[in-house]
Length: 318
Image 1 (cartoon, rainbow, N blue to C red):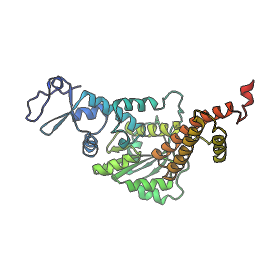
Image 2: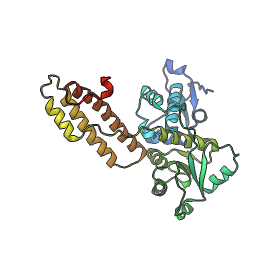
Image 3: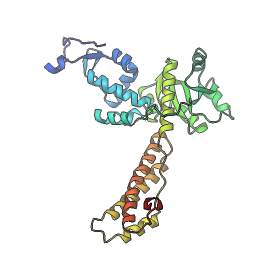
């Protein structure tokens, strides 16, 4: 599926290597990557993700750009915001993809999902019974959602159809279901508003869309939430860290003191990241900080046991 265009347009400069490269029209790129033309143009304006070439008003993307956009789309479907991906190298994108939880071994329990929006409810009614998500609540619009004070217990995800893309509509849902993953469907919206929604870690799909795309988005954010690591508990109190550092001052390597300093810094950063809020991205940063601290604590624990400052667990003596 390629659209190779001869270099006949004025201003379309290519060297000899580029002249033989496969080029893809923006419509073809949208079909292959499942990224809408409108979103590609919005990313170009906001993040500088420009096509390789232009011929008049027609945009052409290279094969390498197509591969990169495909990687970005997969990561966005997994719940990662575009703002955290645009500056990454191809190698870093590959690392992110490798770190995504595998479907193997994951819970097959369907996401308990609420639907908001008249057209969305109509689309649901047109589907068969073999759904990949469990519909637990339905509301015709956000006003009806707000009026339903009792709500529905235990929603994993909320899909909301918005006539106009507005971040404020997300806040209404978060007030009721702070732990639910949100998928936004917008009919109209400026590039800035759509980008602001995606920066919140919320997948934004342009309406009309298919039920399959909606299920894919819900399943992706639900899987990511289930697979995320939990914050690691501290192994040492502040008093214990001070005592270990003081007791190992004679260590010529200085490793215990350096480890205590790093652990203390990570403790402070973990507390700081938690104070910023509980959005998915910030929560992930907090968890990563505590996991990094846990690794250093294990190293410090090994040194402290070697110095006889901490009793060796009985399980290691047998």
